[in-house]
Length: 235
Ligand code: CTP
Ligand code: MG
Image 1: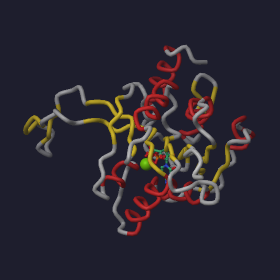
Image 2: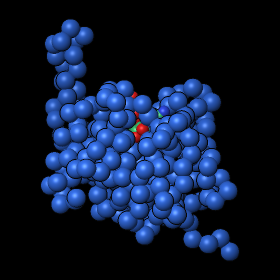
Image 3: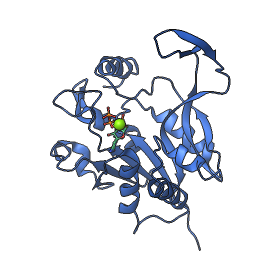
């Protein structure tokens, strides 16, 4: 009697948003009048495939309580760490009494407010039964240049086979905990879950996603995100 594998979402919202700047942390920057984090949670909370959500918050975060999502019974919080992978690891630890090793964990950046329900559904369906898991990603469309360190193009890099990694990324709970613990222990910096899993010699499935699932990185991304949300008919 093993029961069906459940799916947990982890939303990492504990960053400092240094490149974004401003007085409001970027995860709370308003987009069409609603904080970015609310948008980033929307597709996950709308999915019947998601059993529960953990949001990793910065220490002393006083904005979360003002979000309507903070009162959703499926959502719990934890305090994040000093690096993204530490925030994910803490959210996984917060699930320890609920999640089994074979459950799925869907990790998403609070800074990606434009995730569409269809992309989340595509990720879940493409990895159903997969031995490793996978991530939303987009093939790199542009010609890539390598500079010479002095502002001139030294050569053109091979673009074939290159993808941009997005979130969400989905892995089995036990596997992801092990993979991240190993990277943290070895002080190996990882910018996404897939790279931690790759370090174990495994190959996460690349699931083609929408290029407009952008990450808020600098202030200029805010206008772009609002345009994407508006164009998607979301309000
Ligand atoms: N994140 C986190 N804990 C950290 C660092 C990052 O939960 N210690 C989260 C961010 O809140 C964001 C996501 O990871 O939702 C992606 O990280 P990034 O875009 O780098 O956000 P920041 O680290 O906040 O921004 P910056 O690097 O410019 O300071
Ligand atoms: Mg960062």
